[in-house]
Picture (cartoon, rainbow, N blue to C red):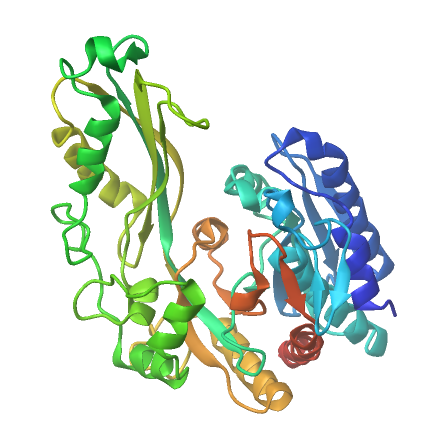
Length: 456
């Protein structure tokens, strides 16, 4: 059986940045690495083309009476920029202390390696394991899984299963496992303000027209109230308050606001009234500005009135909100608040539907919940308690994984999400890393979960 840490090093060396065509060789290298490893542990592998980066589909077991688990992962990673902030080169993995450093170690190459290792070890011990397993590993997660739903629609018959199992979510520390039971949705768009037909000299023409940067600033400022709420009519109408058991699970984390503020490097929080910051980033929707541009951005001064100004906006959505359900109101509000003297264009980008899967034995567990989903939750609970020495917590997470909603919509499958990355892992940032102790416990946990599911 292979050494998972050494294999992870080899995997990380493939610079598989899906957003940048310059990394085409790294994308192909990562794809070939995954297909080779899956073949090595006995899977029949197919590389399914898409309009951009292919999806790897690997299967074992063909008895229709066996339970069928879909294990999801992605082989693409975020761009490594800014390179000067890395202590060591991003695609040359190194181990320092209890961590392995490199782009993709935590998102998602390390977690995928956890499941590949667990499956390999389990099949080595039990070659005739009565469990159908299908790995689905895509190459576009970091650019919004733009072709994944099309792939699912074209291949849904071969992907009919009982449960999706994967790790692309987090835990608070190396001692406490969290099973993610909900993810926020996403609505991403860009607003462009246009004023004069070209950039203007601010001395000759300043004071006679609406500056696009000023218009954009006024517009952005209107989208929140001073207390931190989103200032759009009806924005919160569909929001469902968290259940009492959810607040209880969150309280068991024992998080302290002072520690969180220190971790973020801020002096005070700006969460809406009635919610702690830990509740706000799990249970409430948001409207955030992710980037503003316009005018001169270089060193020194250039006295210019820009022709255009832009802002990138994302809204995180919660059950029962949907991108289609909120976007018309948001866009209409933005258009109505645009100052006079400029024109406004909204460019839609990617979106994702919120997702929630209630664990069994909760007061509001749906009566029509799939029996295999309940078995999956119980298998994870049992394995985590045995390996980690304490039961997992069941929490919603603030991030978005749009493909989970696509899997639910197209295949009708719910997911059990085993968290494996830590706040200190620096996802999407310089010096990304993966905790080797978490990796070791994750492998043992995953092996036990799959062995338990096979008993069905």
